[in-house]
Length: 293
Image (cartoon, rainbow, N blue to C red; front, side, top):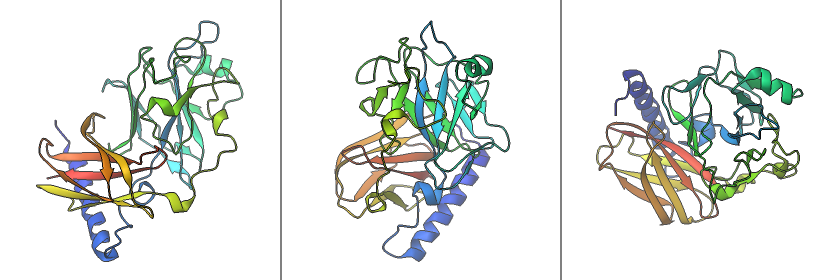
C-alpha cells in the first residue's frame, strides 16, 4: 500500500506531538488519542441505499457531529468502497455542535421529497449498492474518521432494502459497525435526514464517567506497541480492531481482559492506521492513530 509523503509527515508529526504529551502527563496518559483531543470525529448515523419505487429521493447518507463544538469539514471526503467514488465537502462546510449533514445523490429529487430539510449537500456523484458495501469518511489530512460496512441481510435490518425505510443508528454512542445497532426507520417511514433519528429522541448521551480514550506508545512503532484503554472501570471482553486507510480491517483482537493491550507490527506495512476499541456492550468506543515506522 502506498501512502503519500503528506500523509506520512502529518501522521508522524501528530504521533510525535501526542507521544510528547503522554510523557508530560505522567502515568495517567489520558491526554492523548481520544477523539475529542486528538482528532475531530463524526458518525455515519443514517443510510438510505435502496429507496421504494413509490418514494425515491435517491441515495443519501447522514453524518452526525458528536462534538460540543461546530465541526469544520472543509475538504473532507466521503467514499464508498471504490476509491474513485469520492465526494469532497466544499470549503467552509460545517456541522453544528451535535448537528447533522446529509450527502444526497440528487439534490433536486431529495429536496422535492424532503422540502423541509435544509442541511444537505451534493450531488454525491455516485450511488450506493443495494446489496451492501463499505462507506468511509476521511478528514482533510486523508485520515480515516469513520467507516461502516452495511449489508442487506441479517443481522442488518432488511426493511431498508427497497421497502421505503432508511437504516437508522440506534444511538450515536453505539458501534455503528455492528448490524444489531441499527434499525429500519419507522415513523416517518422514509427516515429522518438532517435530524435526530426517531429512536434517539429523549435518549441522553453516556455520562462523562463512562467515557473511553486510548493512549498508544511507543508511537511510531517499530516492533511492538502498547495500547492503554483509559477508563474509570476495568475493561472486560472488549474488542480492538485496526483498519488501514482503505477502511480494511487488518487486525482483530477480541475478548480483551484488562486495560492494556500489546500489539506487534507483524504484517503491518509502514504507514498510518486507525485503532478502534469497543467495550463488550458496544456502548462505548474509543479511537486512536497508530503509526508504523
